[in-house]
Image (cartoon, rainbow, N blue to C red; front, side, top):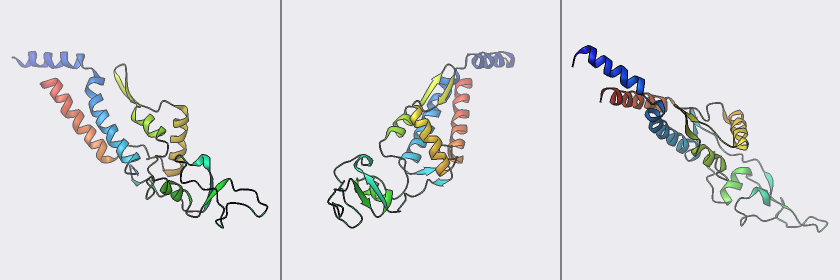
Length: 182
C-alpha cells in the first residue's frame, strides 16, 4: 500500500467516524466512576463534599424516609407538651447527621443519597443525541437540586477530577487509534 492509499484509507475512516460509538463506552465508564465518587464515596472533584450538620433540630415524620425510628418527642424527651398536646416532631440533638444515622444511612460524610432520586436520575442521564454523547439530568426537580447543591457545596461537585479527565483523554486516544489504524 502506498502512502497516498494509506492516507486515503485514513481519511475514509475519519469521514465514517461515528463520534457517539467511539465516545459512548468511554463516557459511560467515566460517568460510572463519577456516580460512585459522588453518591457512594461522598467526594467532589476537589475532595470531600462535606459533613452533615450536627446542629440540634426538630424533624417531622415526613422527613423520615424510614418511618420506624421516628418518635414524636421534644427536647426534654417527653411525648407531650405541658398542656397535654402531643409532640408532632422529633427532637434530634445531633441534627441532620442523626436523622441519617438513626435510619441506617451513611452519616460520616455527605454522599447526597436519601431518596436515591437524584442518584438514579444522574445514573440514567448519559445518552446519545445524534452523533454526540450528552450527560444530563432529566427531571426539573433534580436539575434544581443540583443547582442548590452546587451553591451549597461548590461548583466542582459534579465536575470531572483531573484523574477522570486524564483517563478520558487516554481512552479516547486509544479508541481513536484502534478505530483509525486497526
